[in-house]
Length: 116
Image (cartoon, rainbow, N blue to C red; front, side, top):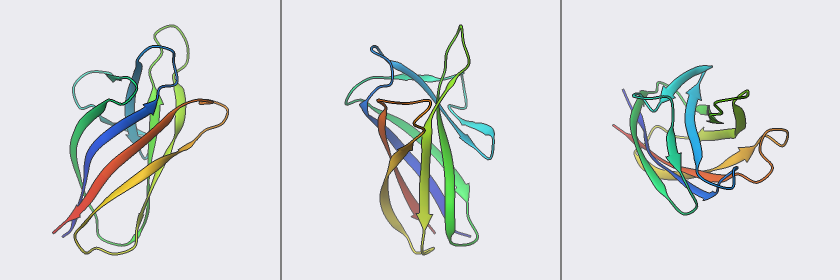
């Protein structure tokens, strides 16, 4: 069965003026980071994800990017919509589709691949 591997996430512009505290959710469940509540990231930084998801068919896989806030509700920065058009091995990059209410500045992309 093919596997979708989330390789890394890159911050072009953080939502906050200092570092963002980010995490990923899939189907309303936090999947990354697996240890801790979030990972800090700043402009032009790359974080290793190293998470694999078994896939059985083509289609769109949606990953939500969130920014952790200690004193208020966490900010939904947007969605990575991974378009899986083939189960053949390959490497891909997807830009964040921003949530305009939650993220006016944030700019991120995620690197992922399909492995056999």
